[in-house]
Image (cartoon, rainbow, N blue to C red; front, side, top):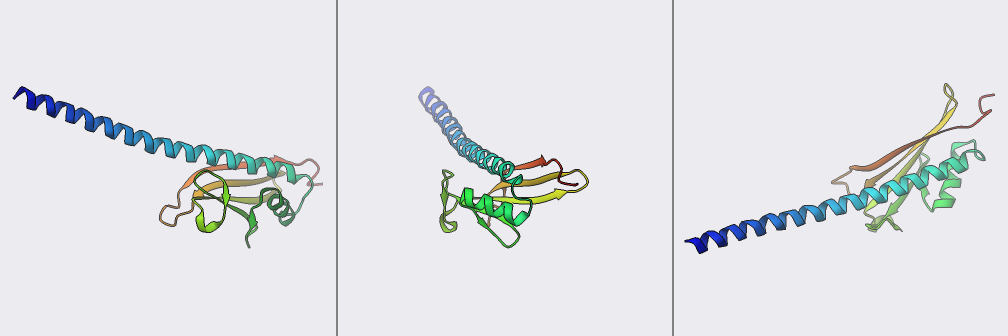
Length: 144
């Protein structure tokens, strides 16, 4: 009887350990995706800062950003670039994630140019946003 209780105790302990390792692995994958998304969003926002001064028109800004990043510009003047599971740029048919950058243009009330970048899963079943970053920049003398 004592032997059976010991075996059951260790079987239960083993089950708990396996569940902990499985949850840790899932959490590690989610953290890696979030870290990659943060880096890519920050990169695009920094590039946006850089192209604002020389490109007052949305189409010009998006073309300049596309040239630097290798992204494509869609009909709505959004930049889209696809990434694999390790956040390397890839084709749309093998992508795990994609980044969407939208230029919101100039807010004449505040004098701020703004836009946002967000990384999403490239899976119709889970269109969750992994990370989103909004960027704003004041360009002096733009409203004069």
